[in-house]
Image (tube, rainbow, N blue to C red):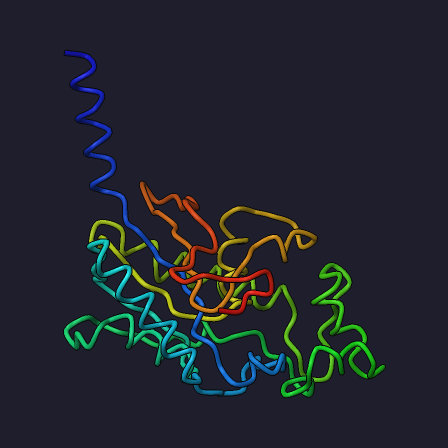
Length: 230
């Protein structure tokens, strides 16, 4: 009898938990060229559209249906979110400025190679090599600013949905995926790149009794090579 009650409570808790799928957008032309995008509004390329379609079909096959969708207002994230909804216009979709990618100011449109060779972007380049040394300069945004707005989004936009929604999708960017997850797991900046987020990677988080828990990180529904390229 005790075991029956235990499994009933476990099932009850599972039903009550809310699944939040934090997803990076599909590939863009600038992604393929290793250019810094940040807040620059670059569209998906054909490969990016295909990656989103593959991901949408795979999650549909698993029976995942979204009750609510949030997206960065940048078109690469919005287009990915729409593909994930599989043309279902009844799913509420909300764009939120707090999900916009890191702002990199004058560095946007530059390649990673340029960041390492141009003294003007030396401290910004640390974001990719040694995050704790990164400094926001030339119109760039700091870690503190990005972590604050993503934390605010989790606390005031996502957490209140517990009990109302079963599955929520967040379509955003690599830097924002990491910021959201690091707000939850409390990792230090030196572990920033330990979170793999290739294009269309899906990170699953649950919300239960007001608490966020990370279930899986960096899941893709297509084959990724060591460079994160299909």
